[in-house]
Image (cartoon, rainbow, N blue to C red; front, side, top):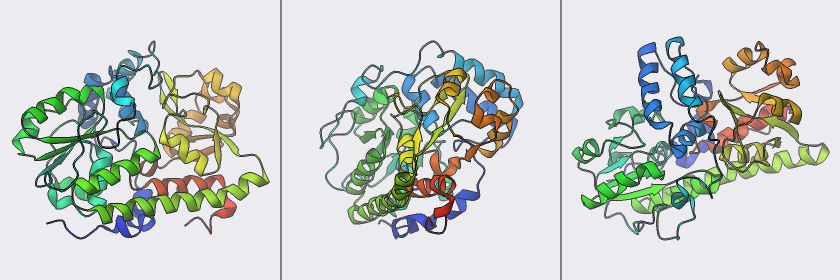
Length: 374
């Protein structure tokens, strides 16, 4: 039996209000050195994959304790000579192409009812949060170790990684449905699960519209279509309210030009292929790297300086570090400490807090609208 719909389905702006005070870096903030190294061992296995790396980068940069910094730098640099490609040229091209409306992103038929919803494992953090938002969390028997939102997800057994998952551990939970992130690295797992008689839904969430599609199909698969529509409509309404409020400000003056760095070695910034670029537009800003179609293209600090952003989007911790870094101080906005403070607990994943993420950004970009942006 599906439980009562969560507060997110009723009021997306207020349900997760506590997370704006949470200090997180990409949802993977290490609590101690041992945990940091454990996370980075996972990264070491995964970051050679384009989709895997972008999956982590969509959740923003990861803060690490000292002992693991060198390891992460070496991991990231192994791909420095292979910049992220557009979806048309990545190794996961088949996963990136639009799928027919009645199939998931791997081409598997999508459920048309809740017959497979008896025991659900979600290995996709955005999907896990949707399951809770629509009040279907009682169906969950497993999640990935990366699924940290909402806090109640901690009650669900963690079954390992969300990319290249431990299929034996997943099958041991006796699932009838598994929700996967649609990266090429998960194709083998999807096939193995399907051969074992387990239904799968594999979806990518690169853009805001992908989030709405994810919500819609999870709602059908878990027998909570009405609640899913409520969640989707509420997020959409919040985003549209922010968009309308910032449009007047944009007409009065040119949009604020910003850059959103998410990785440092190599330097990666948000490009047009990410929902984070869409959030900037909705919040009334212009991404100076909107002309680059990849989600997180590699650039040089010199190129950032040449494009002269008025503000740099980053975390409060990183703002101070950038401002004291000689290379980054070549960027006027950094030198003058003009930062938009990111709350990665809101912006770090394309989930039910997308509306709150837009509000958070817009309040800083347009402080004169603060009283209306609630």
